[in-house]
Amino acid sequence: MITGVIESFDERRGDGLLRSGDGVVFYFHCVAIADGSRSISPGVRAEGRRAVGHLGHDEVVSVRSLA
Image (cartoon, rainbow, N blue to C red; front, side, top):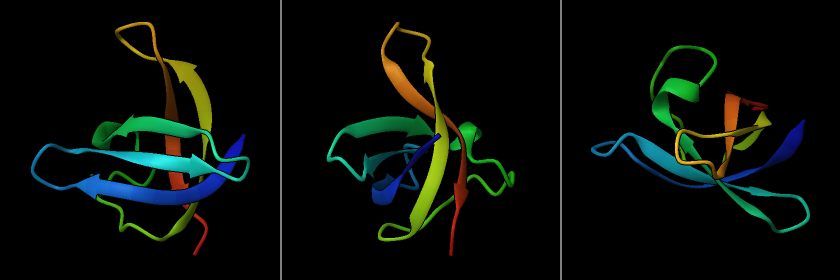
């Protein structure tokens, strides 16, 4: 599991970035938000699972708020 803070989330594009506790930044798409809301606020503590995305890059899936 990766735990960190939502650094950014673009509602229009439907994607964002999660910065892990050790400073690594991971991309995520709104369909990866676990509660199905398709939205998460920047600054929220969150966690997710690291996975390989469609283009072969590391992403976070099953993103959920810890707040």
